[in-house]
Length: 135
Figure 1 (cartoon, rainbow, N blue to C red):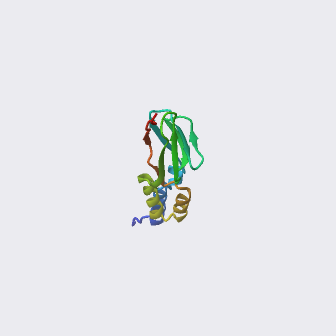
Figure 2 (cartoon, one colour; figure 1 turned 90 degrees about the vertical axis):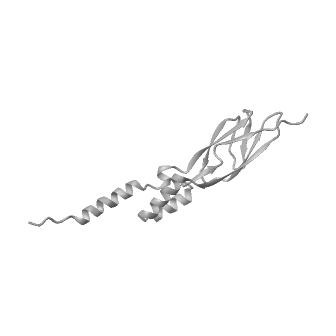
Figure 3 (tube, helix red, strand yellow; figure 1 turned 180 degrees about the vertical axis):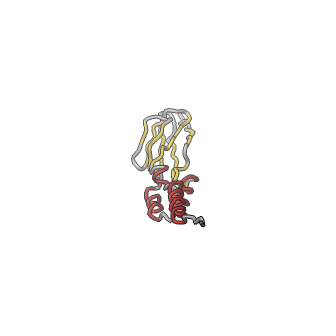
């Protein structure tokens, strides 16, 4: 009796394993991230050009990963300071995008690009040194 291998079953099992290992970034990372802002001295109010704010640093603001904005920090007795925040492809985001490409997940790739799940806010975290006002 000759032993034959079951190639279709092995192929299906291998494909299922690849699909499990290469989940898209939208599922594994989500489309939002916490942007963390600190100031020296602490206690500054933060307002962003995309409508988010926090009353006093240190704080974290939940943002879309593909956000681009300018944050203004204000504190009595100190000059206002700004920081520009943008986004870049994250290391783990790039891995998820590569997984989509390898498995042929064009739909997953499109979803990741639309949601920004493969992106990270930069700089994050950020620390802003406030300058005292001249009297």
